[in-house]
Amino acid sequence: MPARVLVVDDILPNVKVLEAKLAAEYFEVATAMSGKEALALISASPPDLVLLDVMMPDMDGYEVCHRIKANPALSTIPVVMVTALSDAADRVRGLDAGAEDFLTKPVNDLALFARVRSLVRLKLMMDELRLREETSSQLGVLDPATVTEGKGLTRALVIDDGQIDCEVIKEALTDLAEVTMETDGDRGMQKAIEGDFDLILVSLHLRSTDGLRLASHLRATAQTRNASIVAIVRPGDTAQLVRALEMGVSDYIATPIDRYELSARARTQIRRKRYQDRLRTSYQMSVAMAVTDPLTGLHNRRYFVGHMDNLVGRANAGGRPVSVMMLDIDHFKRVNDTYRHAAGDEVLREFANRLRRGLRGIDLPGRYGGEEFAVAMPDTDRETAQMVAERLRRFIAEEPFTVSGGHSLPITASIGVASSTGDNDTSGAMLDRADKALYAAKEGGRNRVVVETVAAPVSA
Image 1: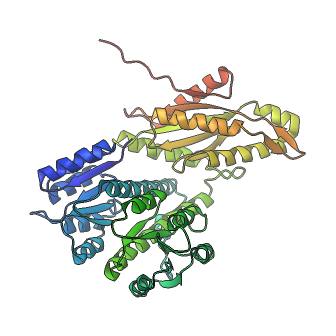
Image 2: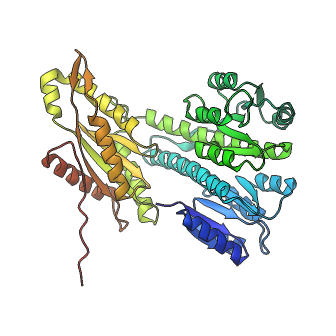
Image 3: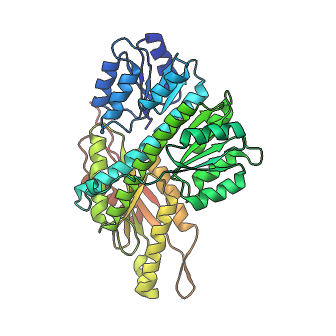
């Protein structure tokens, strides 16, 4: 399903132009002509991102942004201010109000769309973490109030070989973090891996290293992937900026660096990092408290069903669709009978590992019971679910499983897929439909994917 973007501007032609451009990029677009109308729409149906004009008669964009960010239920919605104002003071004021970005018209379309996609990806990830925390709370395994955001020392790493920029950066960050400076890209990467930094600023125009490649490595490396990464770009270098956003940098700032703007952006990134860390800690604590299967480390059936209840409830309320897979290891009894139960346990653990590696980041796998597994797929329609299931089936089957004694076992799985109907569906009904599709897959010869049969509409 496309991301939902709310465009807010009191000038109708501006609204229509942005609406047309975003629709052409496959976004779902809602519009508002005033701040009050925007707040009402956001409360009724929260979007994934708000593109907000600043100069409006009844309530300016600063106030609208402040009210969005002051509401805990709405505060994670990214806000991008798009305005004719161009002074650094206006930009800093917008960032201080909580906006994720402040773009001056005319805005380059490529840069705008890249920024929108980057922020939407972040929003969806945070929504998923919040939903998992909510699931844990409802199951009674965790009280979120007991998990606090980290208040310890913030550590920042700056990888830049421009002397003037480095001086400005250090001055801007001194009151916010303990700052480590590095001019060489390779040494900077090593320090980042070893240093547990919350904020990493990396120049995309290092003389010794490809800055884009460095930013990509920082985002992909396990020790640094959760840090807030801010790219330092040259003004007007849209191509570099777009590529950096597509690689997953958290934010950017253009040279020559304004210390007040950098300070505002850094504060936003530090706040978000602490909030994300709290959500991850909450999730990890809940998982550790009796909601995982001890053999495979996946979520157990109790947690999985509760999570599906939340996902289906959200879909029924007008949200995005949800799909579910049911998977069964083919001929698993033969493994236990031939190689004994210890080998069967090894197969179950490796099967769980392949689920983790073969799924998308938003998917949630669980052990449903015995050799049966399930996967919850939020924001996923039937066609996409079928594609993911088929790719996962091949990933499981393409390489034999090795168990103790050096035995190499060809393991396959049968998979059934069901998707929400949006018509007062329930998780129980979805799991039942997926289980019937799984049975059809096994009856049809195993090692295959079967999608639930959708009844054709009755003609009048």
